[in-house]
Length: 533
Image (cartoon, one colour):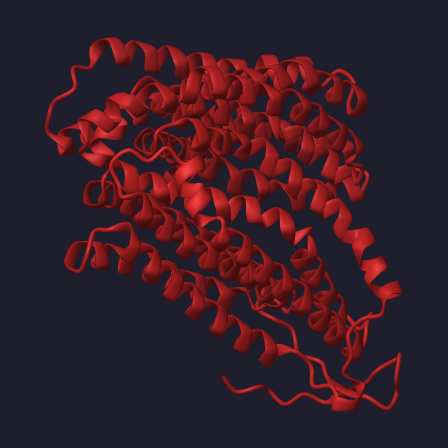
């Protein structure tokens, strides 16, 4: 990649330092499209390959993949919002707010921090690999030494993957998101597709799988380091330094709020997986992981749509057009309901056929089916419960969001711990569904009352309940009527028909969808008449 020549800019902080300030990155639309396409590809690649992993490796080895995913999630707490802070400071440099020496100093400081934490984390996991294999994971069939060696490889891989977030922050801040999206797609292809080739033609054991993951992680980090360093401004060697403590302290004030959000999110979404990794046999943990991954499809479908509303809501709120904010908020709620509610209900009412069509493993489908029901419904409720956050974000005041998340964490974490400890994966699923339902039923009305009095009643009665009721009744009726065949392709076809029927019922119950169809039909008639004249 050839660096473009740009005129030097004198730093405000030190006029003796000449820096090369990069030109603008890709357009916002290109970045958004690239991000969503890459995200969808990465997630779908993982979903498609997981049944192959399960069939080739067996339930216990597949449970190790679930534990590997868990370790990656918990390691994110150590980021403390610093990679997002680096992305922000990179963007501030591009805007001329900070000089090149300050940005370079931030990168050097964070490289020391990330390298030290990654090394410490790797040492701790590697040294504790045998303890994890013998005293934490409930291994029944796999050799304990093989499991310990697999955990050791995880201990080397997870910190490397975590460090890549630092350089992704630089690339995001410099708006090289199209390049990053393409790179993520290539890495996902190597990580998932390459692993499938290894399992099919070399060795289906966990050691080979995790050794391959380590290799890909090393390659990923090396490329990102080179790209991240290459995009940084040129700074004279005598001016290179790490940040002083007073500068680090100022940055930590910003990253602290981000760190809090990350910690809460990890605790809320991962504590059940941590507890179950201890109490469940490894094979059962693999089955549980299968259900959780399938239920994650609800969040995958609903998340990007909902997030696309944020800039529009924020713009309208900044213009003082509060009535338009409420209108878009309610219309957006209906649109998300039309997409996510049918997805959650299809996964819940047809859990076993979905899992069997996906994996081809009848035993795994029967075991994971009841768990999928609970997590699919819980994720659907969680998607709708996130809407008041968008309203608060548009207003620029997240105090209620922070307080509400604290309440949810205080209630959910102990509930998940107790339920999972006593009743296993089903207990965790019931706790997840119940706590999300209580949060939406009890906290959301209060948030609406504080922000927009009089909103909650119409929002619930007109924008959510009709869609949920129509979709649920349709899914229930179909669950009584459909006789599922044995052939997996036939099951997929029936699921597609059932999903289409549930989605059509949801759309028919939505006033926004009906108005859109009515407007489209009227426009078509007008055009037809104009063409006939």
